[in-house]
Length: 537
Image (cartoon, rainbow, N blue to C red; front, side, top):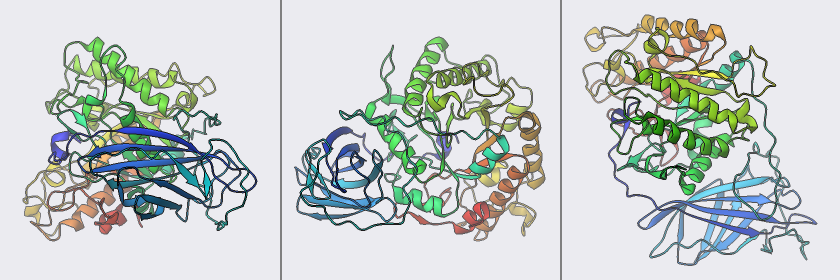
Protein backbone atom coordinates (compact mmCIF):
# COMPACT_ATOMS: atom_id res chain seq x y z
CA UNK A 1 0.00 0.00 0.00
CA UNK A 2 1.14 3.55 -0.65
CA UNK A 3 3.21 4.86 2.25
CA UNK A 4 1.06 7.94 2.90
CA UNK A 5 -2.01 5.75 3.25
CA UNK A 6 -0.58 3.26 5.65
CA UNK A 7 2.15 5.04 7.61
CA UNK A 8 1.56 6.08 11.20
CA UNK A 9 3.04 9.27 12.67
CA UNK A 10 6.80 9.00 13.01
CA UNK A 11 7.55 9.14 16.72
CA UNK A 12 10.69 7.14 17.38
CA UNK A 13 14.27 8.38 17.26
CA UNK A 14 16.85 6.95 14.87
CA UNK A 15 18.20 3.61 16.00
CA UNK A 16 21.74 2.66 16.93
CA UNK A 17 22.83 -0.94 16.32
CA UNK A 18 25.77 -2.93 17.65
CA UNK A 19 26.70 -6.56 17.24
CA UNK A 20 28.57 -8.88 19.60
CA UNK A 21 29.66 -12.47 19.07
CA UNK A 22 31.03 -14.67 21.86
CA UNK A 23 32.03 -18.34 21.68
CA UNK A 24 30.77 -20.46 24.58
CA UNK A 25 30.48 -24.13 25.49
CA UNK A 26 27.57 -26.22 26.66
CA UNK A 27 27.40 -29.61 28.36
CA UNK A 28 24.76 -31.96 27.06
CA UNK A 29 26.33 -35.39 27.48
CA UNK A 30 29.91 -36.56 26.78
CA UNK A 31 30.81 -33.64 24.50
CA UNK A 32 29.64 -30.07 24.70
CA UNK A 33 30.29 -26.77 23.01
CA UNK A 34 28.47 -23.89 21.44
CA UNK A 35 28.60 -20.46 19.91
CA UNK A 36 26.53 -17.46 21.01
CA UNK A 37 25.71 -14.54 18.73
CA UNK A 38 24.33 -11.67 20.79
CA UNK A 39 23.06 -8.79 18.63
CA UNK A 40 21.70 -5.43 19.71
CA UNK A 41 19.42 -4.99 16.72
CA UNK A 42 18.02 -1.61 17.67
CA UNK A 43 18.61 0.94 20.40
CA UNK A 44 16.98 4.16 21.51
CA UNK A 45 17.43 6.46 24.53
CA UNK A 46 17.12 4.19 27.57
CA UNK A 47 16.00 1.07 25.71
CA UNK A 48 17.13 -1.59 23.28
CA UNK A 49 16.16 -4.79 21.48
CA UNK A 50 18.53 -7.77 21.40
CA UNK A 51 18.52 -11.10 19.59
CA UNK A 52 20.52 -14.11 20.78
CA UNK A 53 21.31 -17.23 18.78
CA UNK A 54 23.01 -20.28 20.27
CA UNK A 55 24.67 -22.78 17.93
CA UNK A 56 25.21 -26.18 19.54
CA UNK A 57 28.67 -27.55 18.65
CA UNK A 58 28.47 -30.56 20.99
CA UNK A 59 26.19 -33.54 21.43
CA UNK A 60 22.43 -32.99 21.05
CA UNK A 61 20.68 -31.04 23.79
CA UNK A 62 17.26 -31.77 25.20
CA UNK A 63 17.04 -28.52 27.17
CA UNK A 64 19.23 -25.52 27.76
CA UNK A 65 19.92 -22.74 30.25
CA UNK A 66 22.02 -19.85 28.98
CA UNK A 67 23.53 -17.52 31.59
CA UNK A 68 25.38 -14.23 31.34
CA UNK A 69 25.80 -10.97 33.22
CA UNK A 70 25.20 -7.42 32.09
CA UNK A 71 28.10 -5.05 32.57
CA UNK A 72 26.27 -1.73 32.97
CA UNK A 73 23.09 -2.42 34.90
CA UNK A 74 20.87 -3.36 31.94
CA UNK A 75 17.50 -4.98 32.65
CA UNK A 76 15.45 -7.42 30.58
CA UNK A 77 11.85 -6.18 30.37
CA UNK A 78 10.30 -8.62 27.88
CA UNK A 79 11.65 -11.88 26.43
CA UNK A 80 10.30 -14.28 23.81
CA UNK A 81 11.19 -17.87 22.81
CA UNK A 82 12.32 -18.62 26.36
CA UNK A 83 11.83 -17.79 30.05
CA UNK A 84 14.06 -15.35 31.87
CA UNK A 85 15.17 -14.85 35.46
CA UNK A 86 17.30 -11.84 36.41
CA UNK A 87 18.91 -11.15 39.78
CA UNK A 88 20.92 -7.95 39.76
CA UNK A 89 23.14 -8.15 36.70
CA UNK A 90 22.93 -11.96 36.42
CA UNK A 91 20.58 -13.29 33.73
CA UNK A 92 19.37 -16.85 33.15
CA UNK A 93 17.38 -17.76 30.03
CA UNK A 94 15.84 -21.23 29.77
CA UNK A 95 14.32 -22.74 26.65
CA UNK A 96 10.64 -22.52 25.82
CA UNK A 97 8.58 -25.71 25.53
CA UNK A 98 9.15 -25.93 21.78
CA UNK A 99 12.86 -25.12 21.37
CA UNK A 100 14.65 -27.14 24.04
CA UNK A 101 15.82 -29.84 21.65
CA UNK A 102 18.90 -28.67 19.72
CA UNK A 103 20.75 -31.09 17.46
CA UNK A 104 24.50 -30.99 16.92
CA UNK A 105 25.21 -27.91 14.79
CA UNK A 106 21.59 -26.85 15.30
CA UNK A 107 20.54 -23.49 16.71
CA UNK A 108 18.15 -22.07 19.28
CA UNK A 109 17.20 -18.40 19.37
CA UNK A 110 15.49 -15.93 21.64
CA UNK A 111 15.07 -12.19 21.76
CA UNK A 112 14.25 -9.55 24.32
CA UNK A 113 13.61 -5.90 25.01
CA UNK A 114 15.68 -4.21 27.71
CA UNK A 115 16.50 -0.95 29.40
CA UNK A 116 19.82 0.67 30.20
CA UNK A 117 21.28 3.83 31.69
CA UNK A 118 24.40 5.42 30.28
CA UNK A 119 25.92 2.62 28.21
CA UNK A 120 24.84 -0.74 26.82
CA UNK A 121 27.89 -3.00 26.40
CA UNK A 122 27.53 -6.50 24.99
CA UNK A 123 28.00 -9.29 27.59
CA UNK A 124 31.49 -10.77 27.37
CA UNK A 125 30.99 -14.22 28.90
CA UNK A 126 28.32 -16.92 28.72
CA UNK A 127 27.70 -20.32 30.25
CA UNK A 128 25.36 -22.98 28.93
CA UNK A 129 23.92 -25.60 31.26
CA UNK A 130 26.47 -24.69 33.92
CA UNK A 131 29.70 -25.03 31.97
CA UNK A 132 32.00 -22.05 31.50
CA UNK A 133 32.82 -20.82 28.01
CA UNK A 134 35.89 -22.33 26.32
CA UNK A 135 35.01 -21.98 22.65
CA UNK A 136 35.48 -25.66 21.81
CA UNK A 137 33.86 -28.99 22.69
CA UNK A 138 34.73 -30.16 26.20
CA UNK A 139 33.90 -33.06 28.48
CA UNK A 140 32.23 -31.67 31.63
CA UNK A 141 33.25 -32.94 35.07
CA UNK A 142 29.61 -33.51 35.89
CA UNK A 143 26.59 -33.85 33.70
CA UNK A 144 23.88 -31.30 34.48
CA UNK A 145 20.36 -32.60 34.74
CA UNK A 146 18.07 -31.88 31.81
CA UNK A 147 14.37 -32.35 31.27
CA UNK A 148 13.50 -34.28 28.11
CA UNK A 149 10.94 -32.83 25.74
CA UNK A 150 8.81 -34.42 23.07
CA UNK A 151 8.61 -31.20 21.10
CA UNK A 152 10.32 -31.63 17.70
CA UNK A 153 13.13 -29.33 16.71
CA UNK A 154 12.04 -26.30 14.67
CA UNK A 155 12.84 -26.18 10.96
CA UNK A 156 16.60 -25.61 10.53
CA UNK A 157 17.73 -22.43 8.87
CA UNK A 158 21.12 -21.17 7.72
CA UNK A 159 23.17 -18.56 9.49
CA UNK A 160 25.35 -16.04 7.71
CA UNK A 161 27.13 -14.97 10.91
CA UNK A 162 30.91 -15.53 10.69
CA UNK A 163 32.31 -18.03 13.21
CA UNK A 164 35.81 -19.13 14.15
CA UNK A 165 34.49 -22.68 14.48
CA UNK A 166 33.34 -24.02 11.08
CA UNK A 167 29.71 -25.05 10.91
CA UNK A 168 28.05 -26.95 8.06
CA UNK A 169 26.34 -24.89 5.37
CA UNK A 170 22.77 -26.15 4.90
CA UNK A 171 22.06 -27.67 1.54
CA UNK A 172 19.53 -25.95 -0.67
CA UNK A 173 16.09 -27.07 0.42
CA UNK A 174 13.34 -28.19 -1.90
CA UNK A 175 11.25 -25.75 -3.90
CA UNK A 176 7.64 -26.65 -4.62
CA UNK A 177 7.49 -26.90 -8.40
CA UNK A 178 3.75 -27.24 -9.01
CA UNK A 179 2.12 -23.77 -9.10
CA UNK A 180 -1.22 -25.00 -7.77
CA UNK A 181 0.45 -26.70 -4.84
CA UNK A 182 2.55 -23.60 -4.14
CA UNK A 183 -0.57 -21.42 -4.00
CA UNK A 184 -2.26 -23.93 -1.71
CA UNK A 185 0.76 -24.03 0.61
CA UNK A 186 1.06 -20.22 0.75
CA UNK A 187 -2.68 -20.13 1.37
CA UNK A 188 -3.85 -17.23 3.48
CA UNK A 189 -1.17 -14.71 4.36
CA UNK A 190 -0.71 -11.68 6.61
CA UNK A 191 1.40 -8.54 6.23
CA UNK A 192 3.78 -7.40 8.95
CA UNK A 193 3.15 -3.84 7.76
CA UNK A 194 4.50 -0.53 9.04
CA UNK A 195 7.55 -2.17 10.62
CA UNK A 196 10.70 -2.87 8.60
CA UNK A 197 9.56 -0.45 5.88
CA UNK A 198 8.95 2.31 8.45
CA UNK A 199 11.38 5.23 8.46
CA UNK A 200 12.13 8.65 9.92
CA UNK A 201 13.77 11.21 7.63
CA UNK A 202 14.89 8.44 5.30
CA UNK A 203 16.31 6.16 8.02
CA UNK A 204 14.49 2.82 8.43
CA UNK A 205 13.43 1.78 11.92
CA UNK A 206 10.93 -0.91 12.86
CA UNK A 207 9.42 1.30 15.59
CA UNK A 208 9.37 4.56 13.59
CA UNK A 209 5.65 4.52 12.89
CA UNK A 210 4.46 3.63 16.36
CA UNK A 211 4.62 -0.17 16.33
CA UNK A 212 6.60 -2.06 19.01
CA UNK A 213 9.63 -4.24 18.32
CA UNK A 214 8.62 -7.42 16.48
CA UNK A 215 8.49 -10.49 18.71
CA UNK A 216 8.29 -14.22 18.34
CA UNK A 217 5.15 -14.14 20.48
CA UNK A 218 3.42 -12.09 17.78
CA UNK A 219 4.40 -14.57 15.07
CA UNK A 220 3.25 -17.43 17.31
CA UNK A 221 -0.16 -15.74 17.49
CA UNK A 222 -0.26 -15.18 13.74
CA UNK A 223 0.46 -18.84 13.04
CA UNK A 224 -1.97 -20.05 15.71
CA UNK A 225 -4.66 -17.91 14.05
CA UNK A 226 -4.36 -20.00 10.91
CA UNK A 227 -2.19 -17.89 8.62
CA UNK A 228 0.20 -19.72 6.28
CA UNK A 229 2.38 -16.89 4.96
CA UNK A 230 3.88 -13.71 6.38
CA UNK A 231 4.80 -10.90 4.00
CA UNK A 232 7.50 -8.62 5.42
CA UNK A 233 7.85 -5.23 3.67
CA UNK A 234 11.39 -3.82 3.94
CA UNK A 235 12.94 -0.42 3.25
CA UNK A 236 16.67 0.21 2.82
CA UNK A 237 16.84 3.97 2.15
CA UNK A 238 19.44 5.54 4.48
CA UNK A 239 20.71 2.12 5.52
CA UNK A 240 22.40 1.86 2.11
CA UNK A 241 25.91 3.25 1.64
CA UNK A 242 27.37 5.27 -1.18
CA UNK A 243 28.44 4.22 -4.66
CA UNK A 244 29.98 2.12 -6.03
CA UNK A 245 29.26 -0.68 -3.53
CA UNK A 246 25.99 0.59 -2.00
CA UNK A 247 26.69 -1.49 1.10
CA UNK A 248 23.63 -2.25 3.23
CA UNK A 249 24.18 -1.54 6.92
CA UNK A 250 25.16 -4.88 8.46
CA UNK A 251 23.06 -4.43 11.62
CA UNK A 252 19.98 -3.58 9.55
CA UNK A 253 20.49 -6.60 7.30
CA UNK A 254 20.97 -8.76 10.39
CA UNK A 255 17.72 -7.46 11.88
CA UNK A 256 15.87 -8.21 8.63
CA UNK A 257 17.21 -11.76 8.82
CA UNK A 258 16.15 -12.07 12.47
CA UNK A 259 12.59 -11.03 11.66
CA UNK A 260 12.47 -13.36 8.67
CA UNK A 261 13.65 -16.16 10.95
CA UNK A 262 10.86 -15.47 13.46
CA UNK A 263 8.36 -16.44 10.77
CA UNK A 264 10.48 -18.95 8.85
CA UNK A 265 11.38 -20.97 11.96
CA UNK A 266 7.68 -21.39 12.70
CA UNK A 267 7.14 -23.20 9.42
CA UNK A 268 5.49 -20.25 7.68
CA UNK A 269 6.09 -19.13 4.12
CA UNK A 270 7.85 -15.75 4.11
CA UNK A 271 7.78 -13.03 1.44
CA UNK A 272 10.20 -10.10 1.64
CA UNK A 273 10.42 -7.18 -0.75
CA UNK A 274 11.91 -3.74 -1.31
CA UNK A 275 9.13 -1.42 -0.17
CA UNK A 276 9.47 2.31 0.59
CA UNK A 277 12.55 2.91 -1.57
CA UNK A 278 10.24 3.44 -4.57
CA UNK A 279 7.81 5.99 -3.04
CA UNK A 280 8.18 9.64 -4.01
CA UNK A 281 6.44 10.51 -0.74
CA UNK A 282 9.20 8.90 1.38
CA UNK A 283 12.31 10.87 2.29
CA UNK A 284 15.38 9.32 0.70
CA UNK A 285 13.48 7.26 -1.87
CA UNK A 286 15.53 6.50 -4.96
CA UNK A 287 13.88 3.67 -6.94
CA UNK A 288 11.87 6.20 -8.94
CA UNK A 289 10.77 5.10 -12.39
CA UNK A 290 10.55 8.58 -13.95
CA UNK A 291 13.70 10.02 -12.37
CA UNK A 292 16.86 10.87 -14.27
CA UNK A 293 19.96 8.71 -13.91
CA UNK A 294 18.26 5.37 -14.48
CA UNK A 295 21.56 3.58 -15.07
CA UNK A 296 22.76 4.54 -11.59
CA UNK A 297 19.38 3.57 -10.11
CA UNK A 298 19.57 0.13 -11.69
CA UNK A 299 23.15 -0.32 -10.46
CA UNK A 300 22.15 0.53 -6.90
CA UNK A 301 19.12 -1.73 -7.13
CA UNK A 302 21.30 -4.59 -8.35
CA UNK A 303 23.85 -4.10 -5.55
CA UNK A 304 21.26 -4.01 -2.79
CA UNK A 305 19.42 -7.09 -4.04
CA UNK A 306 22.72 -8.93 -4.47
CA UNK A 307 23.46 -8.46 -0.77
CA UNK A 308 19.94 -9.38 0.35
CA UNK A 309 19.73 -12.42 -1.92
CA UNK A 310 23.14 -13.66 -0.79
CA UNK A 311 22.01 -13.46 2.84
CA UNK A 312 19.05 -15.72 2.12
CA UNK A 313 20.39 -17.93 -0.67
CA UNK A 314 20.35 -21.15 1.37
CA UNK A 315 16.87 -20.76 2.84
CA UNK A 316 14.51 -23.32 1.38
CA UNK A 317 11.52 -22.80 -0.91
CA UNK A 318 9.34 -21.34 1.86
CA UNK A 319 11.12 -18.03 1.31
CA UNK A 320 9.86 -15.97 -1.64
CA UNK A 321 11.64 -12.79 -2.74
CA UNK A 322 9.58 -9.92 -4.20
CA UNK A 323 11.28 -7.29 -6.33
CA UNK A 324 9.50 -4.12 -5.17
CA UNK A 325 6.18 -2.66 -4.04
CA UNK A 326 3.67 -0.42 -5.84
CA UNK A 327 6.21 1.21 -8.10
CA UNK A 328 4.76 3.86 -10.47
CA UNK A 329 5.09 7.56 -11.24
CA UNK A 330 2.90 8.66 -8.33
CA UNK A 331 -0.01 9.71 -10.54
CA UNK A 332 -3.14 7.57 -10.34
CA UNK A 333 -3.78 7.49 -14.06
CA UNK A 334 -2.90 5.53 -17.16
CA UNK A 335 0.67 4.13 -17.14
CA UNK A 336 3.24 6.18 -18.98
CA UNK A 337 6.39 5.45 -20.92
CA UNK A 338 9.29 5.24 -20.26
CA UNK A 339 8.29 4.78 -16.61
CA UNK A 340 6.71 1.39 -17.26
CA UNK A 341 9.75 0.31 -19.24
CA UNK A 342 11.93 1.15 -16.24
CA UNK A 343 9.70 -0.90 -13.93
CA UNK A 344 10.11 -3.84 -16.30
CA UNK A 345 13.86 -3.24 -16.28
CA UNK A 346 13.94 -3.30 -12.46
CA UNK A 347 12.13 -6.63 -12.46
CA UNK A 348 14.64 -8.04 -14.95
CA UNK A 349 17.62 -6.83 -12.89
CA UNK A 350 16.02 -8.40 -9.82
CA UNK A 351 15.51 -11.82 -11.41
CA UNK A 352 18.99 -11.90 -12.95
CA UNK A 353 20.68 -10.75 -9.73
CA UNK A 354 18.91 -13.18 -7.42
CA UNK A 355 19.47 -16.15 -9.69
CA UNK A 356 23.20 -15.45 -10.00
CA UNK A 357 23.71 -15.62 -6.22
CA UNK A 358 23.18 -19.39 -6.43
CA UNK A 359 21.99 -21.77 -3.72
CA UNK A 360 18.23 -22.11 -3.55
CA UNK A 361 17.98 -18.70 -5.24
CA UNK A 362 18.75 -20.45 -8.52
CA UNK A 363 15.40 -22.20 -8.36
CA UNK A 364 13.17 -20.44 -5.80
CA UNK A 365 9.96 -18.61 -6.73
CA UNK A 366 10.46 -14.91 -7.43
CA UNK A 367 7.62 -12.40 -7.24
CA UNK A 368 7.33 -9.41 -9.61
CA UNK A 369 4.67 -6.67 -9.93
CA UNK A 370 3.41 -4.53 -12.74
CA UNK A 371 2.45 -0.84 -12.59
CA UNK A 372 1.47 -0.01 -8.99
CA UNK A 373 0.53 -3.71 -8.56
CA UNK A 374 -2.75 -2.71 -10.22
CA UNK A 375 -4.68 -5.59 -11.77
CA UNK A 376 -5.94 -3.64 -14.78
CA UNK A 377 -2.53 -2.12 -15.55
CA UNK A 378 -0.77 -5.47 -15.12
CA UNK A 379 -3.16 -7.55 -17.24
CA UNK A 380 -4.60 -5.09 -19.74
CA UNK A 381 -1.86 -4.57 -22.29
CA UNK A 382 -0.47 -1.38 -20.75
CA UNK A 383 3.15 -2.45 -21.04
CA UNK A 384 3.88 -5.11 -18.39
CA UNK A 385 6.36 -7.79 -19.45
CA UNK A 386 7.30 -10.92 -17.51
CA UNK A 387 11.08 -11.06 -16.97
CA UNK A 388 13.13 -13.67 -18.75
CA UNK A 389 14.71 -16.28 -16.47
CA UNK A 390 17.94 -17.19 -18.24
CA UNK A 391 20.11 -17.68 -15.14
CA UNK A 392 17.92 -20.11 -13.26
CA UNK A 393 19.11 -23.64 -12.41
CA UNK A 394 19.59 -25.87 -15.42
CA UNK A 395 17.84 -28.62 -13.45
CA UNK A 396 14.50 -26.84 -13.82
CA UNK A 397 12.53 -28.16 -16.81
CA UNK A 398 12.13 -25.52 -19.50
CA UNK A 399 8.33 -25.53 -19.21
CA UNK A 400 8.43 -25.05 -15.43
CA UNK A 401 7.87 -21.44 -14.36
CA UNK A 402 9.47 -20.07 -11.19
CA UNK A 403 8.14 -16.51 -11.46
CA UNK A 404 5.01 -15.28 -9.68
CA UNK A 405 2.96 -12.17 -10.38
CA UNK A 406 2.19 -9.69 -7.59
CA UNK A 407 -1.02 -7.65 -7.50
CA UNK A 408 -2.89 -5.76 -4.77
CA UNK A 409 -6.62 -5.36 -4.32
CA UNK A 410 -8.43 -2.51 -2.52
CA UNK A 411 -11.57 -2.06 -4.65
CA UNK A 412 -13.70 -0.13 -3.84
CA UNK A 413 -11.41 2.35 -2.08
CA UNK A 414 -14.49 4.19 -0.80
CA UNK A 415 -15.08 1.22 1.52
CA UNK A 416 -11.57 -0.15 2.06
CA UNK A 417 -9.45 2.94 2.53
CA UNK A 418 -11.22 6.30 2.44
CA UNK A 419 -10.99 7.75 5.95
CA UNK A 420 -14.63 8.72 6.24
CA UNK A 421 -17.69 7.24 7.86
CA UNK A 422 -19.75 7.59 4.70
CA UNK A 423 -19.08 4.16 3.14
CA UNK A 424 -19.10 1.45 5.79
CA UNK A 425 -20.91 -1.50 4.19
CA UNK A 426 -20.04 -3.86 1.35
CA UNK A 427 -21.36 -6.93 -0.42
CA UNK A 428 -24.68 -8.66 -0.99
CA UNK A 429 -25.72 -8.43 2.67
CA UNK A 430 -25.81 -4.64 2.86
CA UNK A 431 -28.63 -3.39 5.11
CA UNK A 432 -28.29 0.32 4.32
CA UNK A 433 -27.59 1.00 0.61
CA UNK A 434 -26.75 4.62 1.40
CA UNK A 435 -23.67 3.34 3.26
CA UNK A 436 -22.47 1.19 0.35
CA UNK A 437 -20.19 2.16 -2.56
CA UNK A 438 -21.73 2.35 -6.03
CA UNK A 439 -19.00 0.16 -7.54
CA UNK A 440 -16.56 -2.60 -6.59
CA UNK A 441 -19.08 -5.22 -5.44
CA UNK A 442 -18.47 -8.99 -5.26
CA UNK A 443 -19.16 -9.39 -9.00
CA UNK A 444 -16.46 -6.81 -9.74
CA UNK A 445 -14.10 -8.67 -7.42
CA UNK A 446 -14.64 -11.94 -9.29
CA UNK A 447 -14.13 -10.26 -12.65
CA UNK A 448 -10.82 -8.78 -11.49
CA UNK A 449 -9.51 -12.08 -10.20
CA UNK A 450 -10.55 -13.81 -13.40
CA UNK A 451 -8.38 -11.30 -15.28
CA UNK A 452 -5.21 -12.37 -13.45
CA UNK A 453 -6.19 -16.01 -13.83
CA UNK A 454 -6.61 -15.70 -17.59
CA UNK A 455 -3.49 -13.56 -18.04
CA UNK A 456 -1.06 -15.52 -15.83
CA UNK A 457 -2.36 -18.54 -13.91
CA UNK A 458 -3.37 -20.49 -17.02
CA UNK A 459 0.14 -19.90 -18.38
CA UNK A 460 1.84 -21.38 -15.31
CA UNK A 461 2.56 -18.13 -13.44
CA UNK A 462 1.01 -18.17 -9.95
CA UNK A 463 -0.54 -14.95 -8.63
CA UNK A 464 -0.04 -13.50 -5.15
CA UNK A 465 -2.48 -10.85 -3.94
CA UNK A 466 0.12 -9.36 -1.64
CA UNK A 467 -2.20 -6.78 -0.09
CA UNK A 468 -5.93 -6.40 0.48
CA UNK A 469 -8.11 -5.35 3.41
CA UNK A 470 -10.32 -2.59 4.77
CA UNK A 471 -10.04 -0.05 7.56
CA UNK A 472 -12.03 0.03 10.78
CA UNK A 473 -15.05 2.36 10.54
CA UNK A 474 -17.01 1.03 13.51
CA UNK A 475 -16.90 4.48 15.07
CA UNK A 476 -19.29 5.57 12.31
CA UNK A 477 -21.19 2.30 11.87
CA UNK A 478 -21.13 -0.39 14.61
CA UNK A 479 -21.93 -3.04 11.97
CA UNK A 480 -18.84 -2.23 9.90
CA UNK A 481 -16.78 -5.23 11.04
CA UNK A 482 -19.43 -7.57 9.67
CA UNK A 483 -18.84 -6.16 6.20
CA UNK A 484 -15.08 -6.08 6.63
CA UNK A 485 -15.26 -9.81 7.32
CA UNK A 486 -17.54 -10.35 4.31
CA UNK A 487 -15.08 -8.45 2.13
CA UNK A 488 -12.10 -10.53 3.31
CA UNK A 489 -13.99 -13.81 3.03
CA UNK A 490 -15.10 -13.03 -0.52
CA UNK A 491 -11.63 -12.03 -1.67
CA UNK A 492 -10.00 -15.14 -0.20
CA UNK A 493 -12.68 -17.47 -1.55
CA UNK A 494 -12.46 -16.06 -5.06
CA UNK A 495 -8.66 -16.04 -4.96
CA UNK A 496 -8.70 -19.76 -4.26
CA UNK A 497 -11.12 -20.28 -7.13
CA UNK A 498 -8.85 -18.45 -9.57
CA UNK A 499 -5.50 -19.81 -8.40
CA UNK A 500 -4.10 -16.99 -6.25
CA UNK A 501 -2.66 -16.83 -2.74
CA UNK A 502 -3.45 -13.81 -0.54
CA UNK A 503 -2.00 -11.65 2.23
CA UNK A 504 -4.13 -9.29 4.33
CA UNK A 505 -2.65 -5.82 4.88
CA UNK A 506 -2.15 -5.18 8.61
CA UNK A 507 -0.48 -1.91 9.60
CA UNK A 508 -0.48 -2.72 13.32
CA UNK A 509 -2.97 0.01 14.13
CA UNK A 510 -6.22 -0.83 15.95
CA UNK A 511 -8.97 1.70 16.27
CA UNK A 512 -10.47 4.31 13.98
CA UNK A 513 -9.30 3.69 10.39
CA UNK A 514 -6.84 0.99 11.44
CA UNK A 515 -6.14 -2.21 9.49
CA UNK A 516 -4.94 -4.15 12.56
CA UNK A 517 -5.98 -7.72 13.32
CA UNK A 518 -3.62 -8.12 16.28
CA UNK A 519 -2.33 -6.03 19.18
CA UNK A 520 1.40 -6.29 18.49
CA UNK A 521 2.38 -5.16 21.99
CA UNK A 522 0.51 -7.95 23.76
CA UNK A 523 0.48 -10.43 20.84
CA UNK A 524 -3.29 -10.84 21.12
CA UNK A 525 -6.12 -10.96 18.58
CA UNK A 526 -8.24 -7.84 18.11
CA UNK A 527 -10.39 -8.83 15.10
CA UNK A 528 -11.26 -12.49 15.45
CA UNK A 529 -14.26 -12.16 13.12
CA UNK A 530 -12.10 -10.99 10.22
CA UNK A 531 -9.42 -13.60 10.96
CA UNK A 532 -12.04 -16.34 10.98
CA UNK A 533 -13.38 -15.06 7.66
CA UNK A 534 -9.86 -15.35 6.21
CA UNK A 535 -8.53 -18.55 7.76
CA UNK A 536 -11.60 -20.34 9.08
CA UNK A 537 -9.93 -20.61 12.50
